[in-house]
Amino acid sequence: MIDITSIQFDKATGLVPGIVQDKDTGKVLMLGYLNQEALLKTLEDKRVTFYSRSKKRLWTKGETSRNYLEVDEILLDCDQDALLIKVHPLGPVCHTGTDTCFNESNSEFSLNKLEEVIRERINNPVEGSYTAKLLKEGINKIAQKVGEEAVELVIESKDENKERLLNEAADLMYHYLLLLAAKDSSLKEVVNVLQQRHEKSKS
Image (tube, rainbow, N blue to C red):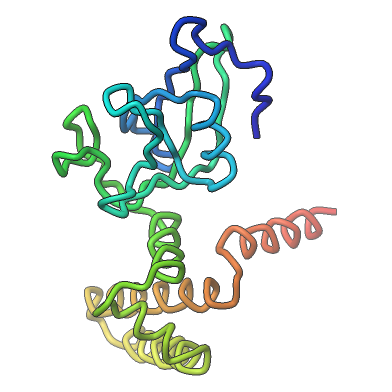
């Protein structure tokens, strides 16, 4: 992902600033500092870990709130002394409860965000969560729900109620993504298959 030996950590503090950006929306979420240990942990865990200058220790963003920053990509700037960390945030980023530490909204939703939430529920089940409940019931139940939602969408498509049509489409999409995640697959992999078919059709 990044060559750690090329990073110019500050000689006095051993730190490098890390600008955190939402991969999907492009919104800047926060600024933090990383030493070499924090960066290595970030690369290993695929979750952003900073070095707290006030507490003098490493801290993983979301270790208390569970609003982790799932790492997608880390880029080094032209002077090799600052990092751009592109992430998928699993909830509000600021400790005050706002989406970003700059008091900006980052409410744009995406299928990637939904996949991240589903994946987080798989790794860390939450009591009372509908997703966790379906996962506990097993793959047969999840597959059954996909079938049920597909049929309901077909039925609604024969009527003229657009709101109900869209709601059934949303239900189907959610359960479809859950089924993919439960089978350790992703929407990106499905898109790759479609891309391969598209390229083959042009040849």
